[in-house]
Amino acid sequence: MKKMYYQITIDSPIAHVFKTMLAKETYKQWTAAFNPTSDFEGSWEKGSKIYFTGVNKEGEKEGMIAEIAEHIPNKYVSIRHYGILDKDKEVTAGPAVEAWAGSLENYTFNDLNGQTLLMIDVDTNEEYIDYFDEAWPQALTKLKDICEAN
Image (spheres, helix red, strand yellow):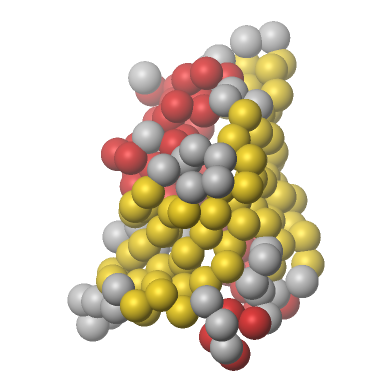
C-alpha cells in the first residue's frame, strides 16, 4: 500500500466545504470524477457502515464497503475500507479485498483566514496510483467550483 496525498485551497469557510463535500447531492457531483454514477448509502457518523456505490457497464450496482473510523465536524473524516459490494452482495474476505482491506481515506480541513485548505490522504495499491493522480485533482477542482459558486 502506498499513501497518496492531495490538497486544494477553497475560497469558502470550512463549515461550508465540509457540508458540501459530504451532502448527498453535492457528493455525487464532485465524485463523478471517479465514476459518473458515484453515490453513497449510509451515514457519515463515526462507527457507521457506508457504501460508496456506482453502476457498472452492465447496469449493476457495485462499490466499496467502509466504516467511518472518525468524524470530527469541520475538522476531519477518516474512512476505513474493508469490502466490496458486488450486485448488492457484500464481499469482505478473499482475493478481491485482501490487497487493500483496511486502507484509509482521510479528509482534513484547515482554516486559512476564511479559506479552507482541504487535505486528502488515501492508501492505494500500485495499480491505482495513476488513476488517483488523475481523478483526485479533478474531483477536488469540482468540489472547489461547487463550494465557491454557492
